[in-house]
Image 1 (cartoon, rainbow, N blue to C red):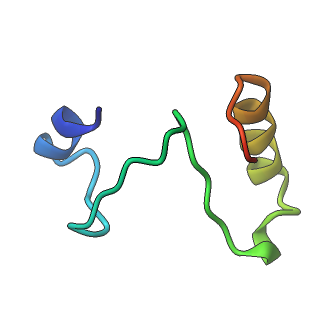
Image 2 (cartoon, rainbow, N blue to C red):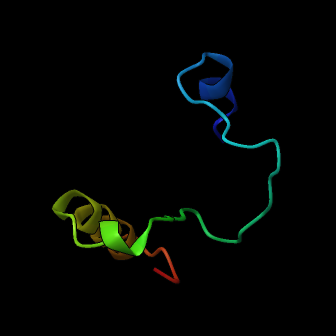
Image 3 (cartoon, rainbow, N blue to C red):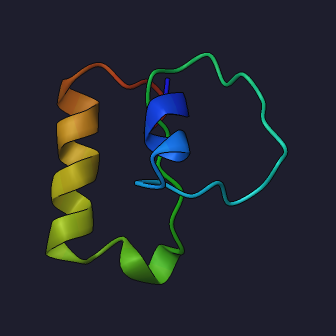
Length: 54
């Protein structure tokens, strides 16, 4: 899904390891960041768009 952006150097791969998660979006963050308004807004957006397990 992100191959074109990776090839154009618009994104960088954090690791060479990949795995299928079964969800369209995943968000990982330290618990201390969860109270930030911008992070909460992103999680809310993903949740409203059907991302399970948020």
